[in-house]
Image (cartoon, rainbow over the protein chains, first blue to last red):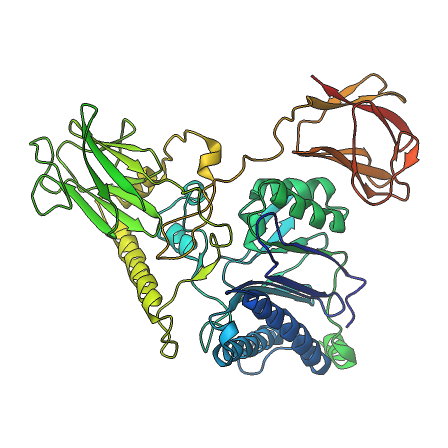
Length: 274
Length: 282
């Protein structure tokens, strides 16, 4: 099913005002409803290599897998939509690929990447993430973060040690507890939510949410949300105007219409005889 | 690394570096920071340090612990906080060194247990593992500590008054071993600019004469569905950009393209058939 007419996507990535190069990597494929954002880490160019492998491999393998199966089909073993299993397997392969490059080539030693991937199908959005790259949903003028960072800070928030206000002043913002390519295996957190017409999903690297408050992101979407490419540029610009201390990347996805999956004649027939 | 400066009546007595994950304060000699005074409990308070953040917790002392004049049970210490125990003062100093090279600071790091294979990293990883343990331990104390857990989280939540909003945005740190972050963050953007308050005055149509001060970081103009433009307030000035509609805004008689266009004092904007003037009110 081609989703180009149903989904609008926009993206922007920028080195920021301080760093010498951009270790973020982003990819979108509106046709299959896929968006990938990775924030690499590791010395020299290794961070770029890690995030680049992640986005390229996940895009191409998802495209290939969806040519064979519809993502909304239910998995026989788990009963959950195939999209979940598909993303889990593909992210595992990206992990292996980065881990092996890091261990076989000294210049890439220790490289890794955070990751957030969204796949839309059948009026649903499946979100997979590892580390502190985020996905937000903007619905009815309200912005809500739908991923929970895998970071020391989030653990401290969860344990009640820090409040959201205090967390803004923490000096331990950069420690993630999970990343792709660091260990032989990694577990992605994968969740599926219903998507509605008018929803805007925002994927971003921590270069955005560390520099721009959620309220300002929400205000931007509420004010100029009708023009997604402009929102993408504006968010990057706000991060840079506030200091731009890190690479900043955003991907925006707007749901323009309902997108129920086409189950084919047999399903229609079954529905008719019920 | 953060430190505490102990003083009595304005006289500095001693400095303590917070280099342990747990530093105890009390009257008895086994404390890391011993204050030999009867107003101080045997085990009075403890400071937990996780990488660059330190948390003070009163251990149920007889006379209590104050931070910046307020009694606290648990407190997230900020640079220049003053902890008072009896007549003694402990100033918490956690400065951001301005000399760190930019390449070094605030890289994202993974916190994890040592991997069996990579020996090269084993040492630094042991450090981070310790930190994980410290974090876990600390959260345990938060959850188990004290009769009222709710009270703990509440008192932990009371933010200390900050001397300077810019100081609040301390950059991220390098790693477990590095002392600490880079240069202080620049002040937040979108504040008032030197040129004065940007304002739009409507020149034609039914609202002619009305003024619209540009107070927000983004202000939209026009009619949704017909033609909309946005004016963004940035540190460098005001910029107008086309948002939606078939027609693009006209500034001083020239039609704009999709790029943002910087506005100058007394520029004339035409939008959805309405003429307006941008000016800076001093």
